[in-house]
Amino acid sequence: MLETLKGYLMKRRFLPVIAVFSLGLFGCQNLKNASIPPTNIDTKKHSVHLAVNGPLMRGFDFNKNLTDVNAEFIREAKTKSVYKMYSISDIHPAMYKVSEGGNELTVEIWAFDSEGLVSVLRKEPEGLCIGKIELSNGEVVLGVLGEEIICNGMKEITEYGGWREYMTQFKR
Image (cartoon, rainbow, N blue to C red; front, side):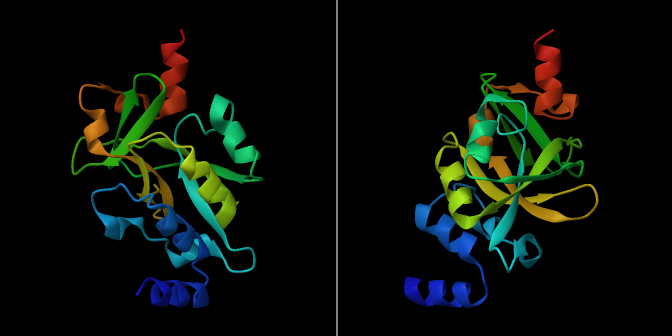
């Protein structure tokens, strides 16, 4: 069954999906949200776009995880106002979708080849996963999300509009 699925996905140039499935990185509660939309795949390079929202962003310590795998910064973007963000012990954020009380949050869009994506995701903290993120312009991209359970008892930082904005206020 797994080989049949891999064959199907490879014919359709879904190599990043195969890599992520093989690592079992989908810790999200709703697995159907963890697929890669065809609009995110460059069929010539097998690249995938990923929205990051914490220390992987430019100017933070773990951005090196992206640059080490030759990921390419595409642009900064805002999510739709349907996400909440929490600071996980001021080490990294966790963002998840909500039906109310969300805010636009700043993310960075990066392009990876499938091997680079896998390398970066292997280094992500427990409780973070990959899923679809809706951007304010209507585009849907893969992105780093947090399981709601790791946010229990943590500081909500949604009002700041993103990790960078929170850390700027936090360091004052």
